[in-house]
Structures are given as structure tokens and as C-alpha cells.
Length: 141
Image 1 (cartoon, rainbow, N blue to C red):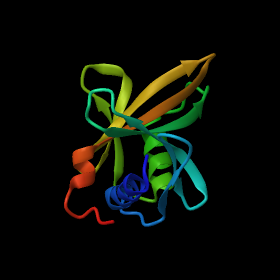
Image 2 (image 1 turned 90 degrees about the vertical axis):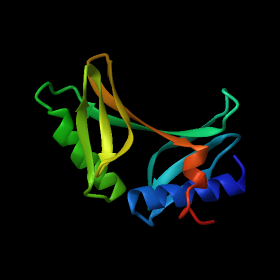
Image 3 (image 1 turned 60 degrees about the horizontal axis):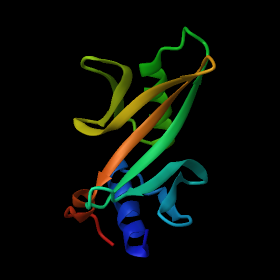
């Protein structure tokens, strides 16, 4: 991940979430961390397997083992707090029970996959970022 890509990803995520406190910090190789303030939200990785360079943001959200936890209100509150954006909403997916979808308004963000390991539930939020997303008008360097 080069400096130009990091700057574009930083600008894209700030614009997408409407939050100027988001920062993309490069790590070794094709990995970067995403922060809001000092809070480490997750990891950005490069995917260039298909010849097209794209990126994936991955965030792990622990929800615990309490069976009474309602995932949609819990995830709505969590994502809104973490990204400092009250317009984020989590909804069920048609014909899928192992995952949910996240939106800002009507714009699709990504998928939250349920992971159940040793009775402890977590959701993995996957937000794909295509090279065309970074080339959009309004993503300034």
C-alpha cells in the first residue's frame, strides 16, 4: 500500500462516514489500521488477486455469549458510536440468517458475518472498497 493509496483511503472513509476523525495508518506490506481518534477500529488489506486492486476493511465486534442480546439494536448502537455517525443502520439480509447488512442511509456499506466460537458470539464487519470508489469525484488528496 503506497502513500497515495493510504491518502485516498483516508479521504474516502472520512467522506463515507462523514467523520474527519478517521485515520488510515499504514503498517507493513499491504496492511493499514483504521482509527477514529485513538480507537483502533480494524484493519484494511489489499486484494489484487483478480487483477483489479481493491481493499477490504475488517472489523471484529464482540457481542458476548448472552442469548438475550438482540444483534440489530446492539450492532446499530456499536457502529454508530464507533464511527460517530447516527445514520448507520444494520438490517437483516433476505434469505440469509448467518449475516446482516450495514448501510448509511440507502448506501450499502458492507456485511456483518456472525461468528460463533466456543459459545462466544462476534460479528465480522467487512467493508469492500473498490478502486473505482477511490477514483470517485470528491475524494481529494
